[in-house]
Length: 300
Image (cartoon, rainbow, N blue to C red; front, side, top):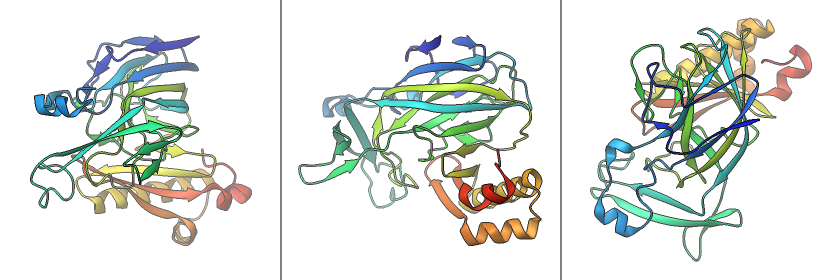
């Protein structure tokens, strides 16, 4: 049986005090309808003129209480499917984005989405690669706004989180309290405008729990790679944390001597930027499975 939640069940902060919108017994399928990052407020230029309620930004559908999930466990969330709406929206400037100093006013663009592309204009089309911007669990401490990333997940804005990917989230409170939202039809690394092609939609997630995988930060796994994800005040700190986490995993889980693990990472791994526009910056370190799995076996 699939558990379904519509957008009326949402949170604006991930919190241990949030009342569960649903309870599931893992393994289980969860289907979440999601609003876009503006809470579906902006569908046309007429909506722009009426203004945005910025207190309603980045809603995440949920939370879902996962029976048996305890602090120290890992929530294993496989993205079965992402369905997106027929229109995306973008904005930049007005104090937002990396070029806010050059663009004083807020600028908007609406992009029809069909047949696998988002239409920027009659001449320019963008191939859609739907992904989840916000996915996380409740933190053990104070509530964290859904727009902020961290060790609980949250607004990681990592374009690897697409159909077929698996997200590993360290459980911090009983039941985990999973929530997700902020879909993008397409987004480049960095999300420099402060938006990708923002869309509403529906995600189908397969949720399970593991108690044999101690993690301090989220991981993403695809068919080809594993990526450690870290968020921090600066991009340097986030990059450092993601790199240290990958080295520790290769050393501790696969038994690769630390100097060898680091040299392998330097030879074939990629240190990448996820986003630089949220309250914390997010980086990831990516290792291809084809390098280590034939010799040392699966990392996860």
